[in-house]
Length: 336
Ligand SMILES: Cc1cc2nc3c(=O)[nH]c(=O)nc-3n(C[C@H](O)[C@H](O)[C@H](O)COP(=O)(O)OP(=O)(O)OC[C@H]3O[C@@H](n4cnc5c(N)ncnc54)[C@H](O)[C@@H]3O)c2cc1C
Image (cartoon, helix red, strand yellow):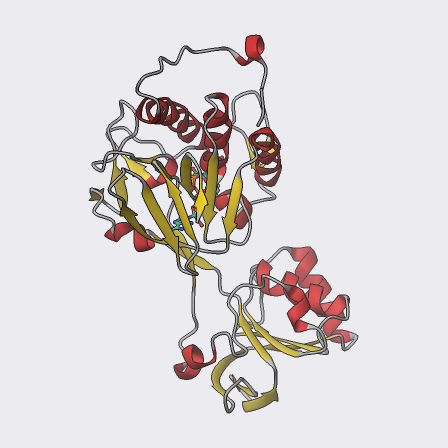
């Protein structure tokens, strides 16, 4: 059981900044995120895009903003459970919440802050009949640990940056024994540099590029052994392969949180703007995941919401103490 003061569900920019604001009040935080890395949409969708509306930063790359937020939170030693979606929540007789992830990791705290953004990112799965049977037996939708592909034959499918970049990565570093990249069109959606690199590597034989084709079947006994590709002109090609990695992007959905008894409106959690509390005392919702009149899904608004929510959380945890606002310029940052 991981015990802390505040369980934050979602390690996006809002969850990360909330660690800092909670730390100033001497409250410890533990973050849970279904993605393998912190940063939410900033890391997953647009790490290389500049953001122009973060106060004090005329321009900052989304990935850099996350690096800075991690650095800012570091003195308060947040814990992380990454790569595991928060699945269920229960309240104990002594007013503690227990949040359990899909992998069974349990976390206990008197306060839960949901900073779940657009929700859990779920992979877009191609419509192949047998695909579910081969999940974790050769089929992966996200590359978490490239070393598992060492000396393996990999079939990657997709036409965006993920498919291109991972094909290059696994082939260029001689990780995979062979990389086949299958894409249904002859043009790609990824960065021009990456597209050109894949074409060059295909010409030099480092990648087997199969365009105008789709993976339509998978077979094997107990684990993946063959990937069946249907080419628009040449018919079926069967590839002996250890892994099939369809990289068609991730789609967000509120996920398990939708069943926690919270008041939901248009796939977002209704909150009281006094302190961003939900209808369940002790549970707050901050950032993109919440809704209220005039809500703006902006990072700076989420920072404000997290700041006010931790003040309210402090009053719940320490009803006997009066919290007096102290400027960081006066008090500095006293880490744990
Ligand atoms: C292309 C693009 C450009 C943008 N540009 C700007 C901009 O210029 N300025 C701006 O202010 N905003 C911008 N935004 C919006 C901004 O990214 C969001 O407002 C911000 O990411 C919200 O932060 P968050 O922490 O609330 O949620 P998110 O960043 O969505 O993070 C939420 C995290 O919660 C996790 N999660 C959800 N449910 C669970 C669960 N059950 N268990 C475990 N983890 C869970 C998710 O995996 C995710 O990592 C942009 C968005 C996009 C897509």
